[in-house]
Amino acid sequence: MSEQPDSDLNVRIDNEEKVAELLTAAYPQASYFAFLEARTDNVGLRTNGVHTRLNEAMYFWEDDQQDDLDTPLNYWKSCYKGIAQANKALELLANYPKTPRVKALYGEAFLLRAYLHFMLVNIWAEPYRKNSDAPGIPYVEASREARHCGLSTRYSGGGLPKD
Image (tube, rainbow, N blue to C red; front, side):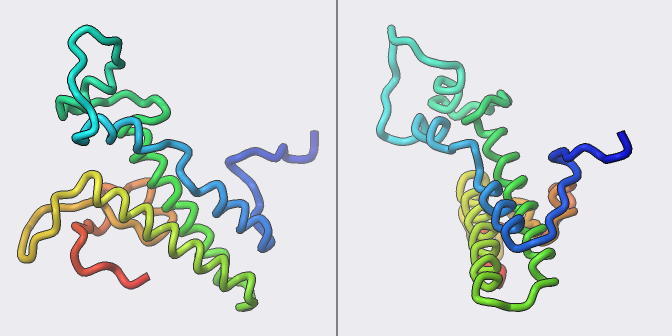
C-alpha cells in the first residue's frame, strides 16, 4: 500500500526506449478513411441500401458529432493527442545526449507533429490563399498547449512552420 500504482496518467518516461514508446503511441488510432471516402467522387447515393448515419452525414457534407472510432471528431482528438505526445517527446529528448538514436527519435517526433498538423489543415482548413484571413487550425508546439488547442497559434497551410 505504500507504493503508488503505475497508471497511464503518471508514467515515468526516463529513458530513450520509453520516449520511443511514447512516439509509437502518438500515431492516431482513428482513421480518416471512413469519413472522407463518402466525400469523394468514388461513391453514389444508395436509395434502398443500408448505410450508417456517419456515411450519410459525410455524403451530404453535414456536420457529425459522433465520437466513435473513425469519425471526424475522434480523428481530430486523436491527431491533437498525437501532437501533444510528439511535443512531450521533444521536450524529454532535449535532456539526452545527441546520439544517433536520439537524433532519430527527434526526427520522428518532428515528422509526426508536422504530418498530423498537415492532415488536420488539409481536412478542416480552407485552402491557402495569400492575404486570406481564414483561421486555419490550431498549431500546437508545446505539449501543454494541446489541452487548450483553441488558444494556440492558428495555421492555415501557407508559410509552413520550420520544424
